[in-house]
Image (cartoon, rainbow, N blue to C red; front, side, top):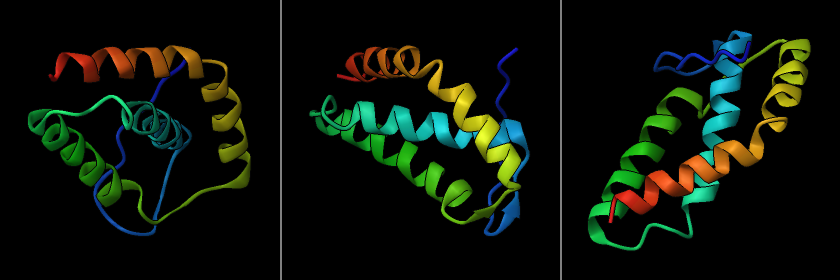
Length: 93
């Protein structure tokens, strides 16, 4: 089962496997949304999302085995995450 948890706000936190999955998933979502948000409202929502990501994942620590596992898990669902992110961003217009 694919689980992800939003990490706490902070720097240099040691993230769990599910928190690393959240980070990697959010990176995919943010990159997918970049070309889609065009209205001022959508840009504001996108910027809030990026700000939230940055305060949680701007600097963190992890175990290499957890990062490798998270990368494998997230890559299997990359297309799903990208499509869902684009749909979400399109609704912000």
